[in-house]
Image 1 (cartoon, rainbow, N blue to C red):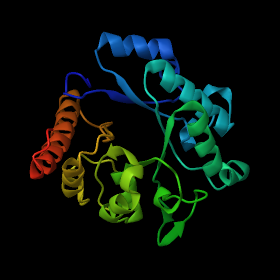
Image 2 (cartoon, one colour; image 1 turned 90 degrees about the vertical axis):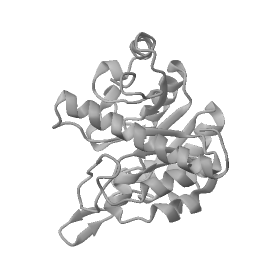
Image 3 (cartoon, one colour; image 1 turned 180 degrees about the horizontal axis):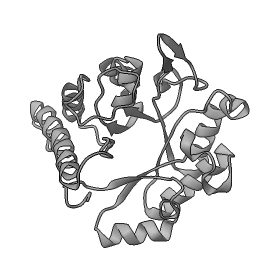
Length: 246
């Protein structure tokens, strides 16, 4: 699907499916479809707490780093700790930095969001849900998550500077749901954000994260094509401001 819809590669999220955990399987699939693996998403989600038969978050991150290197990438995306993971949260920033230094991997910490119940906002991530506020060397920016948090992504981009390493591309309307809409179907300023990146010659990875679970096969393919074309259009628009190559 990724190759057919015009993508340069894929991000693999490590989940309970054994295929997502096995470097030989992943490499074989990447070769078969001529679609390189550009990043690995560590199993640090609520639904992946027991992946690899362990709830030790550092073991899962270490295994994700090994998996990334085995399939030919050095980028690992990870979420910040949950507040009940107290010890892990206390050592998270230092542990991320130490692993980057010792393995050469890039651990790109993703922005999350406060959980909401009616009018009540709950902080469930430690040391915080917004990586802009912390000294992580590399950050993943997810537009859908930023929409839930009502974050100003243009300001985030400016604050992050060269720490912005990776993007999860999907839109949102600011509801309490993690919508992951096709870009342009929400209200985030994604077009201008991407144009600014194109103007600077930013060379990170943009990974599509749009929800297609309820879509037909034809609609899913259409949505994926629309998303990659949206990204390329606006990156190119920015590059043309400076006469840069796209």
